[in-house]
Image (cartoon, rainbow, N blue to C red; front, top):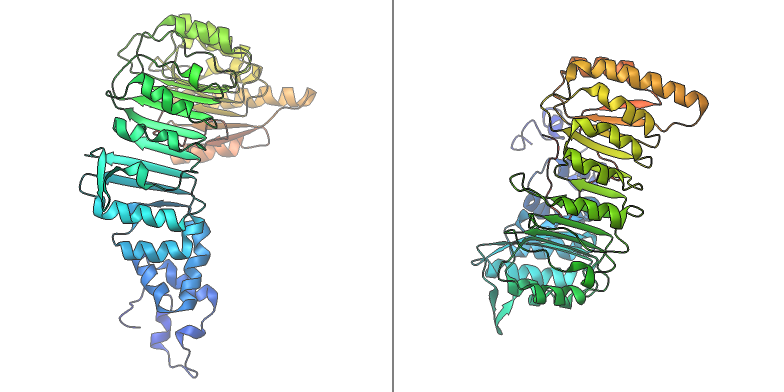
Length: 433
């Protein structure tokens, strides 16, 4: 016990004479869980699990919570991975794997374990670091996705994958979501479209171009897309195409480029009756009218919205979630009052740091007064107000005491709702600076 130190949950026993000797295997299950909680390293937990079946059972019971998502670098030794995945492989739903040109000795045995033990895995994220297209096996050189026998994956994410890797997508015919972070400039549009045509179940597609390039004809090859995310696309893009099932669209571009105004005009024309979620990098005053023409929007996120066009947002009567920042360095919170009160379905409002903090108390009081009047004559959904401003803890508590009610709740924890949940197949970006 002395070797375990004072931090051990059973350390108090060392200083007391025991009438009845208690063996460690006589402890109840909760004690074992407590012992495991003091082991920070996963390989230490595995070593304890190897010591006795009772400890092994604790590890197995933890699996549905601890090992839903795994990363190849969680463990250094393949023998440890073999032991863990034999016990807990059925709990794994998602795996992240980094692969470089010197990693074949680790990657290939690890993939073999995934193929054998992770029968329920749905999402594989491959990150290529200093990679080469081919990897060495006993049978010769093969593509790393050829080694992956699990062709029934539902989600696949590729980061910095070379063209030969992408050309293996056609074999994963059950894919529902695909994210490619950094499209190889050597990948021809015709070859890429051929891969997408082979994925009849694809519903979510996220593309980040490594260099700005012409937009490929996605609509002709992915007619069933429900979500599309594009980043670093060519500024001349005037139309994303006609996707009959599209409900969610994320467009991100560099502030240094001037986007084609026809893009916003075509969005309003094609999707005014079906698009429900829209995320944009910046909107100019002359473009705002096209955005609010998307009458069925339930979620709008824009880190740079013109303050003179805030009043246009009142036209979005189906809006449930609004993530907003203004282009001006100091935007008046009171300008948002009409938006909050007129958008009667709004349930979540996320505001960035540029809003004037000294108006916060006045704004909250005005919103509460308006909500009470609305609630008196009809149903009014509660509003969660998420703030990014660095407000002092004392002021946060003071404002919460004054405002938290059935109508309005304040939050400084960057909470997300079902509509503004970050796309799991896209790099997380902090929209509010």
